[in-house]
Image (cartoon, rainbow, N blue to C red; front, side, top):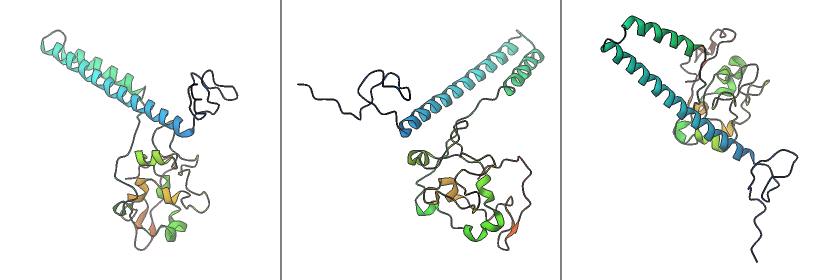
Length: 215
């Protein structure tokens, strides 16, 4: 007699919330980890498509230059067409999948020491309003949340702050698992935050709507 399949095995052609699986024996929906793995795969494929598309554009331009060199059309005609094509592309920006790179975020050398808690009442965690990307290690942990519309940038609240920055205390709510970029960043030389780091003289607030990238 054949052994019964494991109940935690998912073999479905389609799963709809509230409905039984179309085929197989699983009754549980895909886990969030599985869904995120699928998203990551899809995003990486999108990145590959973007690279191939740009290669195609480069090839087209090279062909245009070759036609000019052989006298098939003038340089002015080519430049006019290229300028028009560039304007068309700028009107349709292509989203990019960004993934930060780095070593083990828990390594001692990747943890910069700054007296953040003593400064929060002054700076109000201004660095937590900066934009930055997560690493593969961050994604694998599944703690730090990323922006589904702009993978894999850190997710923000409507007020522009990181979703893990407490709105009242400005403390990080996932401090033990904070991303690599947060661990290696220091505001000591960042003039966007401090005019004088040692004297704790705060820099003027950024213009409304200004988005900064954490370096």
